[in-house]
Length: 140
Image 1 (cartoon, one colour):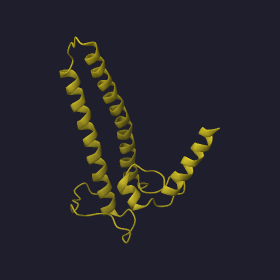
Image 2 (cartoon, rainbow, N blue to C red):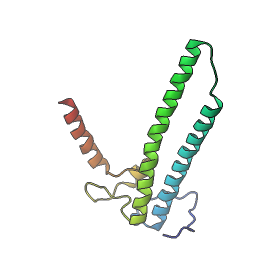
Image 3 (cartoon, helix red, strand yellow):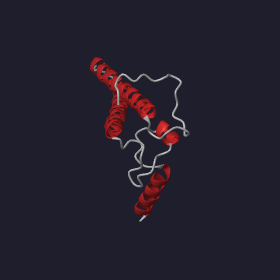
Image 4 (cartoon, rainbow, N blue to C red):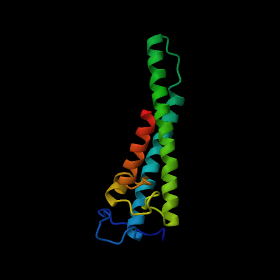
């Protein structure tokens, strides 16, 4: 795939075109990169705020509240770190030609699902089966 491919800002993948053509792949690549950049920017902002925000708060309740806020922020960033790993995996799938196909069935994942969750590796049907199996095991 050519790195210099420029997408029309109004482009949205459509069911009527060939699945995972160059234009669709570039659309999803750009979408994934933008998502990753947003997450990384948020992480940098959090680190800066935490470095600047280290201060001695005399009131125990205020200090506890700030520590709770920091812990919540760090948990959120940890979840986002895991999403970045999934984004990187999706970008690798774009490069190796497996992006957009269900890991379980090998069938195409709907464009609507990929547009909503471009890191998806299972079709909606396979995901629902997976979740039902998980629920059965959890309920035992």
